[in-house]
Amino acid sequence: LRLFPIVISSFSDAPVFIVNKRLYRILGIVGQGGEATVYRCEDQSATEYAVKVFSFTTFPASQLSRRVRNFKKEAKILQYLSRRSPH
Image (cartoon, rainbow, N blue to C red; front, side, top):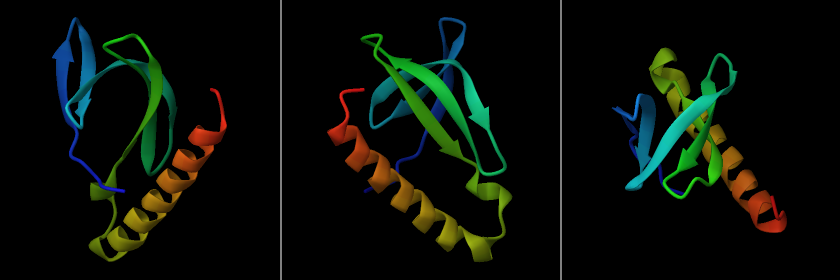
């Protein structure tokens, strides 16, 4: 699992994320907590996704390593589940 920077810009009056050279248009916020915001997005083919954006800069440097490790663990679990589900 690799982490990639996210670039946020504006497209068609809606913010977009560019991740791994793929464009995702933000449709709305699904949820927001102390560590992250989950956005409902769609790609250029109108396939919908949930995109979770962490706010790692809001935590002390001493916690960064643990939080990145937890993020990677969550991503692996979600990747495993996505292969098992038709949704």
